[in-house]
Image (cartoon, rainbow, N blue to C red; front, side, top):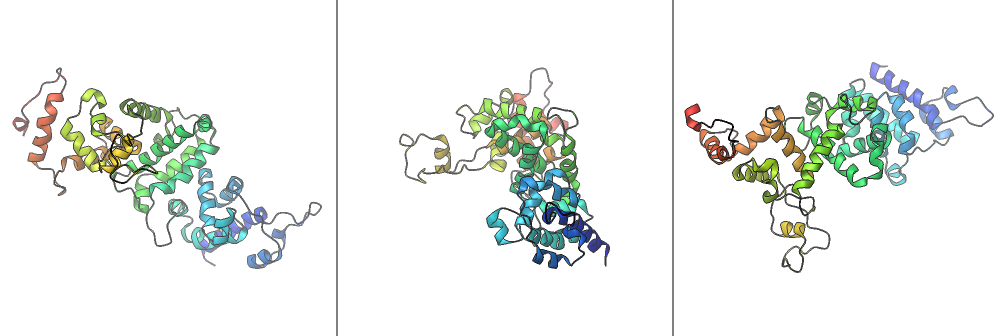
Length: 359
């Protein structure tokens, strides 16, 4: 028996009493004390079905971070159609998970966490933003540091978006919106997942940066101030007011071209042929005319890139903006083009030189 199989069997032995509790209230004999094959045990006693709120003890048996409990439950549900329908995990689904996933990846905890979070099929090699929603939901529901958000669903939704954008932003390839296992490792996302478990204060210095409520509040307030009509979208006109109009129209037009998106047409809105007077909704107008703009998620990456331009993700962000012809190179002409628009925005206390005199 190989080492991986031994570890898998050990986990199954730990978890078996959870799914097959004591036979009767007056008996001390448990199913685990009869060393029958696991399949045989499943045939002789009906397994307990566990909701995700009851699944933390199973996560502990698997020795994975506590806030991957909901993700683990979701992964086990995917092992059978019956479980997907009921929403509860039995021994059968857990055993399939251990044999097909846990045994394959353990003890590589980063690869195991990646696979647990991944909602795609066996051949899917990527994590996408939606895969992290269940993890952030677990944190918000079960970590006391974020209990105050329970009374504000809207803030919870925006906070979740902020955390996920920051996790992807830290991989240096913002805009691709998918993570390989290599990206997952290099960005240190497993450490963030493990460290958030010990967080006791959402404003504390030791909280993982993507979960900082202080940062989120600053970002959200900046967005809300720019979004005058509060439709949760920023047009180029809105974005130009950022930082006292300190960024040029040319640069912001490219930012929206590279990182903006066309809003989704509101439910019940006409796709075409509806005049603005009949349907004054701003989002509907933007959607009908295919006008790119910023939602809150795009703004999170924008403000991080503006406020820390020298970070590696920030450099990638602005390089893409400057690379007008998208050839992977920034030419002198491209730099000069943006500089001519930007130098008039430079505060008076700074000395401004002719661009080419610096070359």
